Length: 131
Image (cartoon, rainbow, N blue to C red; front, side):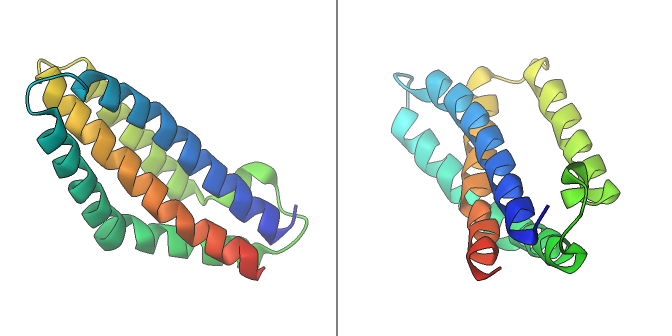
């Protein structure tokens, strides 16, 4: 598969996870006490996470996809280390979901991660348009 296809798949994966987390988080926050402030806080945290953490991860992943070039396995568009990082993030998310943490705090975390994923997906889009 071409580098462009790998980049688009990566972007779609990040956006689909963002949609799931965002819907869960927003559904808890909407209508609640301080909903607007919690949403604004979550979005601000997500933008910061995108800028200071995930952009670098996405840029390294995009560079890897471009260097792999054509005829690469579809599942290999992320490195083993990146897939392990995703697994850890899933495990942490599940742990938080079943923890005694207040639902509003979990919702803020979900919206923050969703925001970060959406913001960082632009890295894959930018590189796909260049490829």
